[in-house]
Image (cartoon, rainbow, N blue to C red):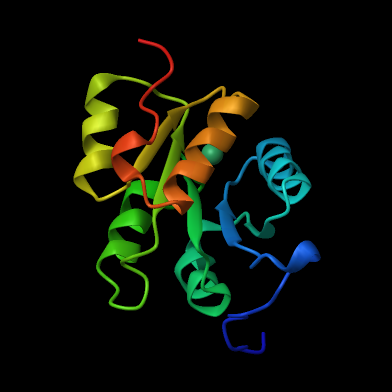
Length: 149
Ligand code: MN
């Protein structure tokens, strides 16, 4: 795959800067749902099904936000978040973790590795988009915390 420069400065319809979102999710239906919803809101999305290439794709796409599934096939999303956060090029990109498990310990582990936002699956559209917009606006502290106990 050819390495391309991050498409900084690309302008979307209406002249607004198009924000790029990397969607790392191994479930086909969830990945398509996230991407469809984000595209419908005007974001440029890069879907990644295979967690093993997530870091490399992040370096090529240089997203404004990463959506990270925690339960991936051969790698934990927690390890990928830690990898992003330890990379000098990628560490400032906010990460929204999504996980099927909503235990208190899970949320703490997700926070510990440096994710700025966290949503429990099943993810509803409105809280998802609120989290996305909040993180893109730099409001890590206002990013939503688990929807259910
Ligand atoms: Mn998964």
